[in-house]
Amino acid sequence: MNAPLSAALYERVSHVIPKAEWLSFEDDIEAILRLKNERNAVVLAHNYQTPEIFHGVADIVGDSLALAREATRVEADVIVLAGVHFMAETAKLLNPEKTVLIPDMGAGCSLADSITPADIALLRQAHPGVPVVTYVNTSAAVKAASDICCTSGNAKRVVESLGVPKVLMLPDEYLARNIARETDVELIAWHGHCEVHELFTADDVREMREAWPGVTIIAHPECPPEVVAEADFSGSTAGMSDYVGSAKPGRVVLLTECSMSDNVSVQHPEVDFVRPCNLCPHMKRISLANIRAALEENRHEVIVDPAIADGARRAVERMLAV
Image 1 (spheres, helix red, strand yellow):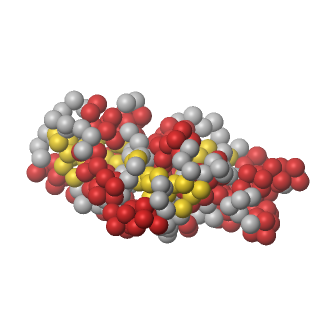
Image 2: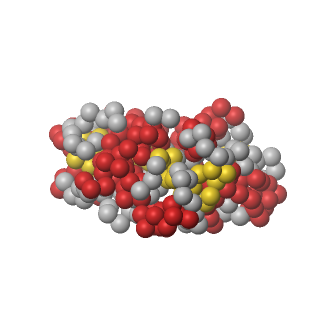
Image 3: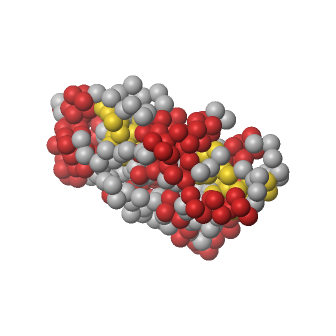
C-alpha cells in the first residue's frame, strides 16, 4: 500500500485502533487491495466486522438488507463475504454466475441453526394456508421452504405487504414478538434466538441508566422484548447507525454486537460510546488474514444446491421487491 493511502485509511480509524496494532494489519491490507484489483473482486462486510476490515478493505458495508440489495448490483467477478455463512449464500443466490467466497466456513449463526425445512413443513401442517416469512438469518434450504424473506430492517413492511391476518414469522422469536407490537397482523413465532442479543436483559438497561444518567440506549430487535421496551430506540444495525447520525446523542449504548459501536464511532467521533456489548464468535472468525487467503487461494467457495437455489432466490427477490 502506498504511504498516502495507508495514512488516509488509518486516519479514519485512529481513535479505535492503536497505531501499533494498525501496523500489524498493513501487510494484509496491502495484499487484499492488490488482490481485489487483480481478481476483479469486492469485499462485502457486515456491520459486525472489526474496524480494520469494515473501514480498511471493505467495498460495500451494511446490514443484511443492504448487503442483499448491493449484491444484486455487484459487477465484480469475485465476491468475498466478510460475514457469516447465510450472508454468503444469499450473495450467491443473487449472483449465481459469480464466485462467492467466505473466509471461514465455520462462520455460522445460532438463528440459522435453529430451524430446518422439516420444521417449516410441520408448521405448515399445523397452520394450513398461513404464509411463512423467514428472516434472512437462515440457510438457503430454509429460505426455499418459505414464501418470503425479511430482515430486521424491513420485517414489519414485509409482513404487512402480504395482506393477510396471520403469518408464521421464523426463526427469531424476539424479532417476531417485537414486530407484533407494531402491527395488527397476528405473528406466530418460532423459538430461535440470537446467542448475542439474547444475553441482554432489562436489568442491564436500568443499570446502565443509573451508571450513565442521560445516556441514550438503542437496542437491536433481536433483543428480548423487555429490553426493547426499556430502550430509547430499536432498529436494525443500519437503523441504529442512522439514529446516531440524526439524533447525535452525547452518550449512547448500542445493545448489539461489539464491533458495531467501533464502526459507528469512526463515523461519529463526537459521540461517547459506552460499550457493554457482546461478541459474536461467528463474526469474529473473519479476519484480514483469512480474507487475504480466500483471495489468494480461491478458498471456501460457496455453492448452493441447484435443487433449492430457485426457491430460495424467489423468497429473497420477493423481499427485495417490497
